[in-house]
Image 1 (cartoon, helix red, strand yellow):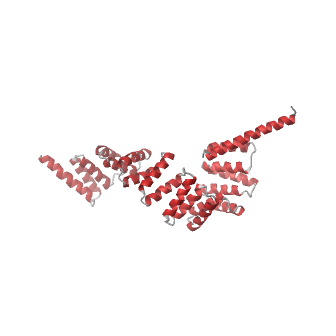
Image 2 (cartoon, one colour):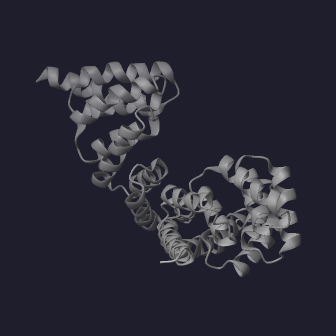
Image 3 (cartoon, helix red, strand yellow):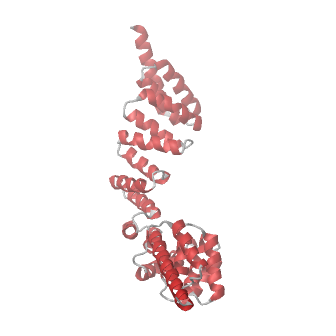
Length: 343
């Protein structure tokens, strides 16, 4: 074989390898395996593959991985080679926004839009920046334009939803977040905002369904567990509340809300003995809460431990002399204690 044939054949193999690498990187990108995607795109860049697809996809992977300082550095590197690369300016703006340099982000993003008036990321950036700057009418207009140029990007719809929320337009905001979830059913921000709106609308069963979906994606999501706990308690579904609140106490052992609802779930299912034990942790976290001491007194009352109930009710009254429930529990416990003595 002559040397030219060998060189061409070797080059062809390298091209095949690079194309395979690119396809694999894009499959990781599609699956949101950001770090794996970035590693392969970095390998392509290291081999001198610097076409726009590779550069843009590499920055997209860095964005998805939350590596904003690296994203800023890469975007700037591209701009050093080509100052009119609108997509690099948009990624630079994205990184600066996430790093909380809002003025610099706005300047970079405006430059990107001057170069490409229909650049999807730049319109998503603009609406996000305007939301952060509390320019809500402008943010809504920009988000609407982002939806028009990037209808399949979950962030376009999510920004529109947030903008609508600032005008108390709950139903249209809910529709926007639903559309965001059509684009990306794993978008935790859209799921959180959907739960918040459903709770405000009093659609508690839907809140529970939405939080269940969230927890399948992110089992330790404290926000979703909190919304589920609130909804289950409002619906008085104490058996379900018990599991949710207990998980919340495990993930947030110093969270008063979690322990209060765990205690209430035990009381709601008639498990007063376990509730009384759980009160020890709750009262350690919030020892000056007359309401919690009164609930403990009521729990002891239901366990027919009247003398202890009186002592606990006295402590609740000491903390808040104008709290009638504590006085009622004390009087009832005192009455039944004397009735028991007479027998």
